[in-house]
Image (cartoon, rainbow, N blue to C red; front, side, top):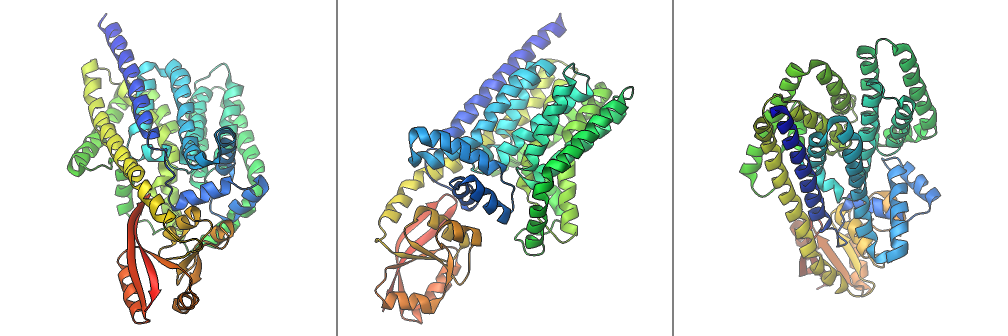
Length: 506
């Protein structure tokens, strides 16, 4: 009787977590109504405006495969066709929320049926509000899309290993989601390799009686994946050669392991000490519930751990290997696509606590605290951008027609090219990514002092978008050339604070 009561309470707890997840995502969506974008998002929105053939050709010059951009073009094409092109950026942000909607359907159907309401709710809650994840449901990048694909791919492995009747369907989902993920993002591709490796181990350890037939299916899926990915392999090799030894990402060290952990568990909000406390409690809770799961349900724990944790382990290890080989191309956000499976493991582990529901609640509290702080952090950060956007629009509208803009930071030059498509945008003594130069009519070409002087002598309106302390050094140097910089505005555009100066010849 007590067990039945516990199960009923856990069911309602799961429903409560589902409702909390909806409240959190609605709060996030409420802050997507302005056109604020940052540097990486410029690539996304500009690629999505291209023809499919041009889009694929352009992504071949970039550092990501094309599938996400095709998906983004499809979503923006549908919604902007109905509501108009003015909502393009907002629709692009909503495109990152839609994969969360698919995860809701999966949580309420497949996960609920297999593990019950509590795991369904806990999983949805964790992938919605845990640190970092919320940011990527409102960012115009491929991370939430890849998270959805690789989570579905991993879930299909449970059906494969645990002998579902629709085994062939599960293999089909496994293969399709795997190859789609491979065409979405390269570290997500590495995560899929982790899923394949986990599947292989699971078949060998769990399905011993008919492992030969299942291993043959695994081999067929792997072979078909290689065949279907072969057209893109020359592009991958070319991209790798282009960035080898010439990329902005710093090499990994032993400290990076702690950085990975912090990225996963540390909320980013204004209450820094409370965030540290929450992170510590979450880490302790994760360790304890994992140990308890292995003690109480060893066989289930082994299978679940292999499927859910192998992808993130492989992703992190590959980052260290590539860094050691001289190609440091791993940043913490590349773990996002495999974090759905990792949080599923934690949800299952909490559910596996064979104690009273009060113990379950005790272990949930750290995650709820971290979730509240994360939601607060996401809201405050996004709301700040929304609040400052009118000032940005006013400042940009105040620029004279045909004004020349000079920036000393490539990110500011790139976003300025997006917001000021009719203006000439230059980067002071440097060049932005040549892809953006092609996409935005020469935006961001290098300019030096002599060219600025020539423009001023020719009566052109020249403005300086100055970032960081280096802007003061540049202005001081210009004074020696009889160029004065009069500050007209100081604005926050997305995450970039910069001053606007009007340049004049003395």
